[in-house]
Length: 292
Image (cartoon, rainbow, N blue to C red; front, side, top):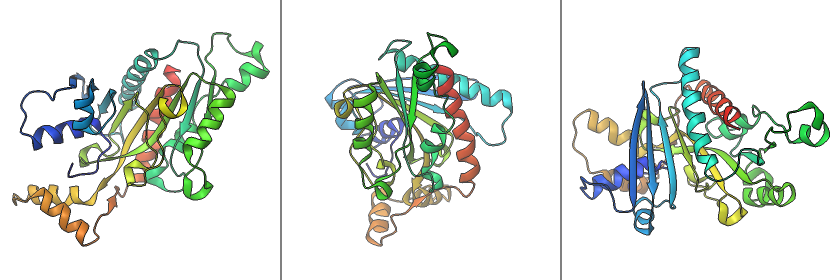
C-alpha cells in the first residue's frame, strides 16, 4: 500500500488499481447501496487471501459515506443517524442477543481534537448499568445494560488500552465491546464524512502510526465492534491529489518515497476540525443510543 489508510473500502480500491483487476478480489465480497445521497459499501473478507490483499482481518466492514455533515438540516442529520444505527444494529445482532450487556469504549485523546471523537462520544452515551443495579424498579426490565469508559492514551496513563479494557471486561463481564476511534483515510472527500463499522476489532493509534495492542475477540474473549471516523490523512495524499488536479503525471511510489526521505511524513486534518468533530460526535452517539 502506498498510502496510510484504515478504511477497508479504500484498501480494496487500492489493491484493485495496483493489480489492474476488473473483477472482485478473491476472498472479498462487496455490495453497495444508496439511500438518497448516503452511500453504503459493505466489504466482507472471507478467507486468508482476502486478508493478505487488504491487510485486514476476516469479517465485515461497512462504510457509510455522506456528502457533508456541517450545516445540514435536522431532517438530513436524522437520516444519517437512522442509517448508521440500522447498520450497527444488524452487525450487533449477529453477535449477541437483544438484552445482553454492552461496554462502550471511547478511544483517543480528548485534548487532541482530531483524536477526541471516541472520548466525546462516550460523554453522550445513555448509561443504564448503574440504574439496573441500584434502581431496578426505575427502569424497564428489558432495557439493555450499558456501561462506558474513556481510558485515555498510553502517553498519559502509561497503561496499554487493552490492559485497562481487559480488566473492566473481566470484572463486569459484558457480552460485547463497542470501540470508537478516529481513523486515517487516503481520500480527502471522506474526512469527517464517513463512518466505518467493523466486527473485527481495532488497533488504538493505528491511524496516526502509533499502533498499540489490538482490542479484539482474541485479546478480550468477547466480540469487539469498532466504529471509526476518518479525521486525518497522510500529507502525501494531498500532494498527489493536487498534482493530479493540475494534470501533472506523477509516480505515487516516487512521491511517497521522496516525502519520507525528506521527513515530510505528516498527518493532516482540516482547519474546521472542531466543528466537524462536534457534528460527527452527535451523529455517532445518537446512532449508538438508538440501537442499544
